[in-house]
Length: 240
Length: 86
Image (cartoon, rainbow over all chains, first blue to last red):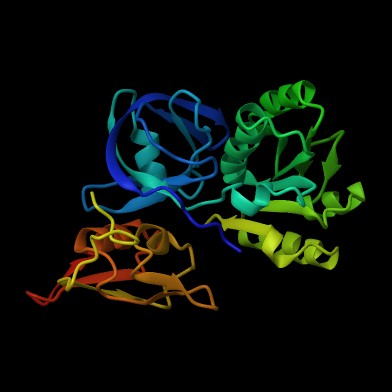
């Protein structure tokens, strides 16, 4: 299922506070605007004078200063070019917050035994927001697991931050999976779904949140359904 | 900006007519997120129109502009002009 949005979107002009290359083709942009949003939602940014827009998930979580998006500029389309040309203090027209994944309502009910987040590439963006919101704001103490799949080690970012979070919270576990590691990689190698199987965990009463490419979502969904996870417990957002 | 879904803002009749180009739609659902009273995803994950007057014109235009594959066309029925994509 796909989560429904709760907040009403509106158009707001924001300023670029900071733009930073995280790693490889991944760029982070911080905006200074105020937005009443839920962790996991996204915004739509006007990327040219014709009015075309591109959607970017928020990496920040409610209560954190500023709004952060992460953009993989590999496609080098209109959105990528717009982001690359952005400079500090530039104005950006934002429409949001919009839909996206949310941990809300029944997901937080007492029958839920844990929360599994699985992302590939920049699909980790809304998952960061949701994981931080659960741990730092909602003080969630049930098991929370984040599995992030990337191709190359050189493209990794936020790993220190997630490892720090893992040290801080006993109920949080961070799994890093590379499909094409260089040399010796001490963690799991392959696809995120393969590595999830290796854990041998029972996710049948967990809430699941998937974000990334369509193939990953399909494969993880099939694997989890075979392991007894209810269709209603699987929330996803496809990145294109 | 007022959004019509779930509010008293529902327009009686809008002048912008939206159309989904099925071959271009990839099911990203941006249109649904922005104008949920006009668009929905069908069981094949393709956007379809549920109510041409579900959202006000401005919302329908934003929904079309939010589509990453430009799969939503907008026609001004008063002039007959296609106003999106330009």
